[in-house]
Length: 266
Image (cartoon, rainbow, N blue to C red; front, side, top):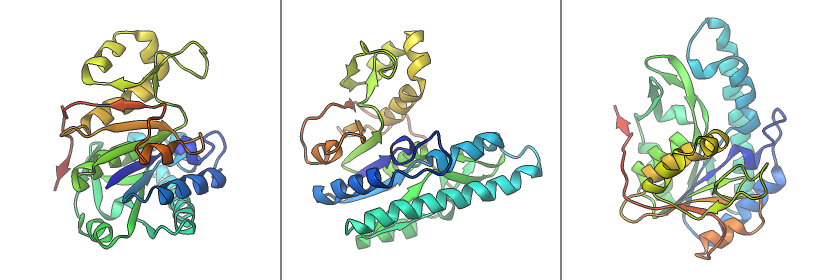
């Protein structure tokens, strides 16, 4: 089984509120279907979640009850996005259902905790793809908090023990600099814990690619027993399918033994 994260930067236009890239999602769904692989999908919230969440400081937890309508607003929007994602998966003949993370997980001071995984395990065992997504979850310490797609990936990795993991983003992988502003930036094809520590010594690189570096840390935490974790560009047609089919494609692979375990149950 392969665990796939579809980044919000790929399936939405993050600069425009509630802008779904239906054509891109339809193509990615088709590529997943053509691969013939058993897959579980999670996806980011993109412009369906980040814009309103940022405006009302949802990531800081309960500050005052004026945030409450915004929580409901974000939860409505990301569920709407997830149904759009599921519709495209079903159009590609993949039996998929949207599963709200709050139905099986909670948070405790920002840490994601599995409380009841029976339903999603049963869905996957039956051959139905559970589709999870970045969302606002209840937090035992802060009242509520933002649960990212990357956090979900780590927890799902522990629950399902996938053979491989793929993060689908809007760039080819981790670079020596920001490839969107520096044409001389070089793609780093393989990252280990040692490589990432060396990259972090360069403050400029860390400043401009901090989000990707943090993602790489999460990817390295999912490396276990020789499992490879890839970051690949979903904006390039056929790239995901080629990767799922075992072909060599431009991407960054995280390799190495798992060095941290953040999963909690309770």
